[in-house]
Amino acid sequence: MLAKLGSINERPEFRMDPQWSETGDRYLLKLFRDYLFHQVSEEGHPWLDFGHIVSTLNKLDVGSLERICLVSRDDQNVLIVSFAELKKCFEAAFNELLL
Figure 1 (cartoon, rainbow, N blue to C red):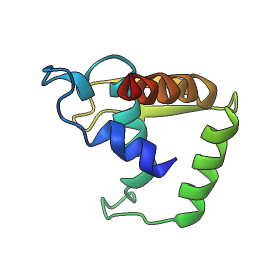
Figure 2 (figure 1 turned 180 degrees about the vertical axis):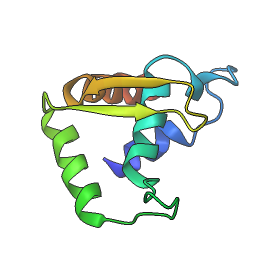
Figure 3 (figure 1 turned 45 degrees about the vertical axis):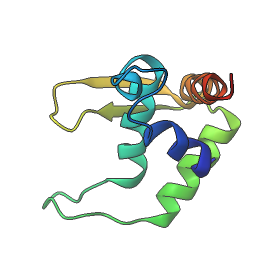
């Protein structure tokens, strides 16, 4: 799952579209990556919790109906999304790379 997520998120351009990773389902996955790996404490320090990472990936893998709040780095976009919705986005974006 991490290899697939990295293949989607770390691809700045696909099919001659420099905004590919910043639009549609892929934007949700970018915000999810930040939720997964870039948590911070109340003081603004990096919060590293491998339990959070493993638990969150498991919820994505099974497509849990639990909802999470994804926030853009500039705090201008806030999206509430279920792991089931994220899983659909994840699978669609990765399958797009295989075509």
